[in-house]
View: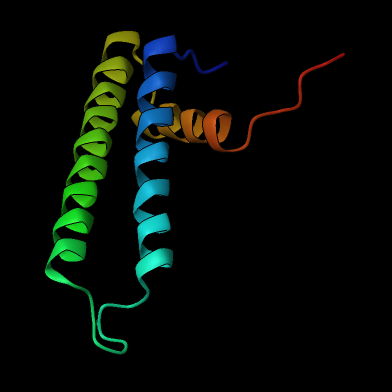
Length: 95
């Protein structure tokens, strides 16, 4: 049986992935907090704010996955797996 996903689920997952990319970019820019002189207070605050945005986006997509799986009587695991596959590893579009 094919796993059914909604555009809303896909958008929520894309948003969570984008927020995580921002966290990783900040970490790459700032380096490790324990290296050298460490992070400034402003860097810590900015990183924490971005971490919270990622967590909020992740919580939203997880709640939506659970609700969708229950409403459509699909396996929650299978819904999440297919969603992550579609968003993170999309198949090339046919020409």
